[in-house]
Length: 235
Image 1 (cartoon, rainbow, N blue to C red):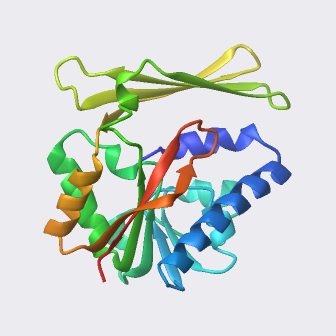
Image 2: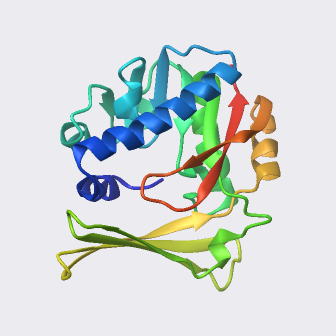
């Protein structure tokens, strides 16, 4: 998953009004998804931090697995826990955004991550993936840049393919402030996850109603590529 350091730094990229706009748009998207699934969740767990929780916590009880310094930095009212193992009651929805399951070294790591998620919801897992079969974003030399004139911060994201295992790559994020101060986050170990692969893993864990939401696409904060939203029922 995108690490906590990223979210601490990326907070500087937009003013309060902009963040509210970004967050509101993503909450609307998620609530459209809830309606299409015919659910009205009371509790939502996020296995990694995402700013969308600031909007969700206005109407839902949210639990986030992340460093508590993020709770203070973002002035969140949600519960923050150090580990998935600290969750004692399954939530109605597990919201694993930003291609959570691709942050892994091996296929077994991905299976283990999915099994963890299946145990912390008695309802729906909602996650996101790019189309690695037809798009292969990890094989492209893609470096995306975002510049915010007010804060004078440039964000560069780089993927470096593994020369031995074609399914793996390393992800680096560079943040340049004031044209001089460089912060480097990475390498983050990543691995492809295909739609059929996730369907098989989910089925092996007793998941039902696996769906790629055709009319709903998610785009992460300050990212240029859309991700497909996928839902699986574990309750």
